[in-house]
Length: 203
Image 1 (spheres, rainbow, N blue to C red):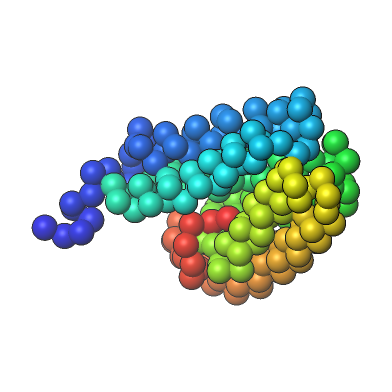
Image 2: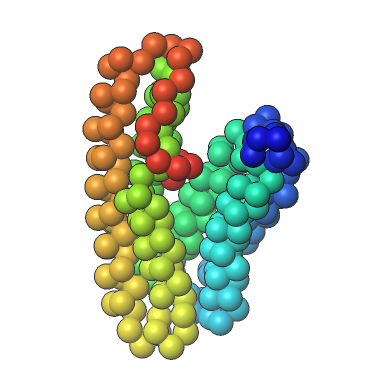
């Protein structure tokens, strides 16, 4: 029996444990943003909840690989990540922890890349994640975590703000890498012919 045939779910499956974890993260994301506005930007409750949400991202990826990756999961996972990070960053900008400029730059890149992936997909090109894109997600998560951690977020907010600007740099550079890679693929791609760039699930 091949490794693929031993998986519990096929590529077209929707109701999977991994998708349940991803949907849970998607639902809780706006609640987290509302909590930031309700109880302030630094709180042990917020920090604990953020750690759970971030760890769930790695957990659903592990579960997906164990039971079998799906097309629905490949779509929902990065969507949940974007909702989580952008919602948290916007909430922290509203309460004054972060400036709006770095948050807007990250949001612009994410929206632009989503539109680019849609265009590339119509030409038959899949645009998975590069290592730098995965790194920017980690740094974005770290920036939020530092901002809401009570001892550090209150006494040394510059640590979180500096980390956020590092995330902005990684976010923009990874976006440029995607465009340069995919432009070469799009020139030779024909509609209906799937072509995949190197990497993992899209971010």
